[in-house]
Amino acid sequence: MFEGTVRLFLIWLGALLLMAPVSFAMAQNVDGVSDLKLPGISSYATPKGETSLALSGGGAITLSAQLTDKGSDITRGIVWRVFKPEAVNGKLPMVASSHGGTAVFQLEPGSYLVHASYGRAGATKRITVGKDAKRESLVLDAGGLKLDAVLSGGVRIPPKKLRFSIYEGTAEANGDRALIIPDVEPNSVVRLNAGIYHIVSTYGAVNAVIRSDIRVEAGKLTEATVEHHAAEITMKLVRETGGEAIADTSWSLLNESGDPIKETVGAFASMVLAEGDYTIIAKNRDRIYQKDFTVVAGQNQEIEVLATEAAAMDPEEGAD
Image 1 (cartoon, rainbow, N blue to C red):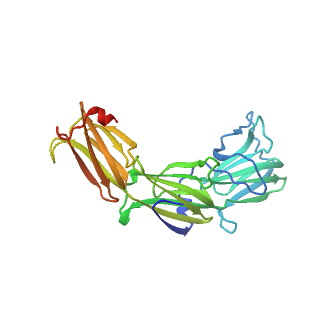
Image 2 (cartoon, rainbow, N blue to C red):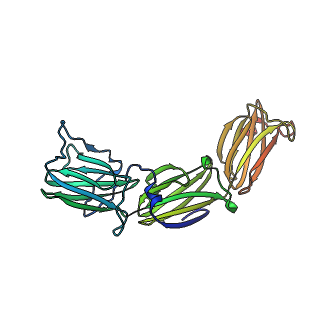
Image 3 (cartoon, rainbow, N blue to C red):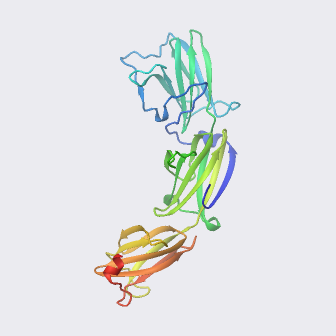
């Protein structure tokens, strides 16, 4: 299920969820509407001509949405889109759209598909409009997810070095999972349909990665905190202990199995690494130097590689 530690907290949604940023939606089917591909709302046909299909002389339809079937109306952050149900050249003609909370449309009598998106949560419903005013409600069955990560002992991780990716909870036959949202900043609220999601937390840019499956419940804000077992490491090539770093050094980092996992060039090689044993190889001009070291979770350290004749390796040996 997950590597490391995950702490979950559930909070009933209120102002926190309503204030979260809005992004494109993932569609959810309601009232038997199936096989409607609406994520991102990228495949629809805009009305032709200057006359809108939303007519002032038609029936007034009031649309509202709730997080749960017994929840109150969402007052802001909803994107409403109304479609004709018959596709034109493979795309649904969009009749009208609106942003905000409860929306009122004047539509000519007929059948329509209504899609409401609320962040990454969404729902679709088929409605029928007559000459008389009526009201329709969509239940999004959605909640919020707030993610964070710490080091061992609860030490905070700099937000700029921490990112999350949210995937679908169910893997495909080949083991891959569909990516829903990449590069989610810590402590930001993401609106999602209720369900299980696969979360990938990345600290730094090498191998400090934690995976976990987290359930989002409708009408609640789920706060999840994962624990990374990693540390920040800075390496430098010096001619003597405590000396100045030698510029124009090429660095190759190997894991315990001897597989290369990172290469960089510069006087310093700074990176975040998961706990474990590593080998660093430094090359400067025609000389190669090597050092083994261990990363302990939560213990940042500076590693010096001595550039002495005694420590120098044969270039052909280093290439192997």
